[in-house]
Image 1: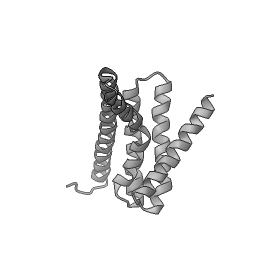
Image 2: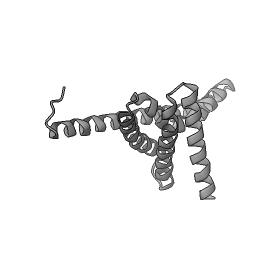
Image 3: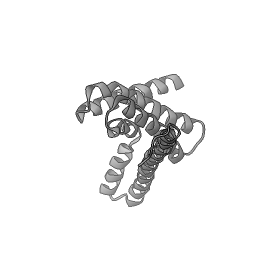
Image 4: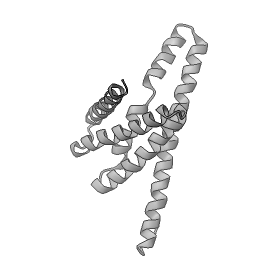
Length: 154
C-alpha cells in the first residue's frame, strides 16, 4: 500500500513538473532535472507528513530543502533559478483545495469554503517561506564560501 502511494507520488510529481516546465517553455536541458527536484521536494514533504509532522511544517521543510537543491542546480547549470524553483512549488500547490473552496462558496457552504481557503492560504504561505528561507540560507552560505576564498562580496 505504501509503496503504491510512493510510486504514485513520484510519478505524479515527476511527470506533472516535467509537463509544466515544457508548458512554460523552460530550457530542455532543465526539464528532467526539474522533475527530479520535484520528486525530492515532494518526498521530503510526504515523509515528514507520514512521520506525524503537521502539514504546514511538512510543506515548509519540503519547500526549504527543495529550494536549496534548486538554487544549487541553477548555479551549476547556469540557468536562472526560477526555472528550478518552480519545480519545488508544482507538487505542493493546493490547487484542489482552492477549487473545492470556490465550489463550496458557489454552493453557499460558506464555512466549508472559508475553512478550505484558510488551509490553502497557510499552505501557500509555507511554500513561500520555505523558498525564501532556502534562498536566504544559500545566500548566507554562498557569501561565506566567497569570503573564505578571499573574494570580496558586494
